[in-house]
Length: 178
Image (cartoon, rainbow, N blue to C red; front, top):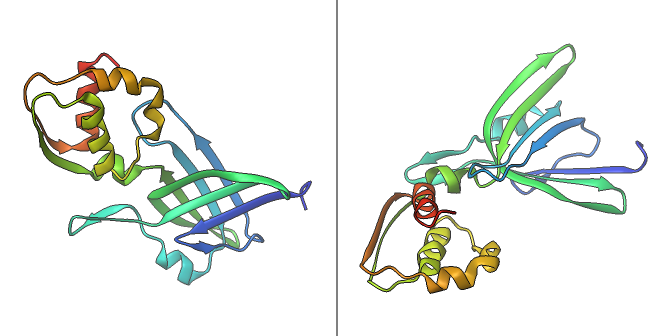
């Protein structure tokens, strides 16, 4: 035991054995891109390695394995990352097989979500942003500090959005100088 350190790695609702060796690095950013985690998992079973899926679009549906990482100490740990597999490779190194994965939080929502919607004149900026967030499967809970400002800004004419949800949010941000 390493000073009662605790790790729990879950892939698609299956908790991996704590006895496996894990190595990870998490990079968080305020940029409009997914936060990234690189994780190496040593000696996964062949069946488990074969069941892991990279994030893709298949028949307009988002698809990819989700990995959750909880870490800390035996009685004090929290989820520190959850994300989809962006890249995966399996490398043989001496007696080990290392599954190297790059994860992105919200990767599919940010990169694959499309939205088509028309709003009537007078719609609030808050409503437009809320609808875009909703299309991405996000709640927009973290907008509370600017909610009043967003509610007071209204579109004078009808407003149409069509295309990638992320690009729509980028365009709106530029329009309001955010």
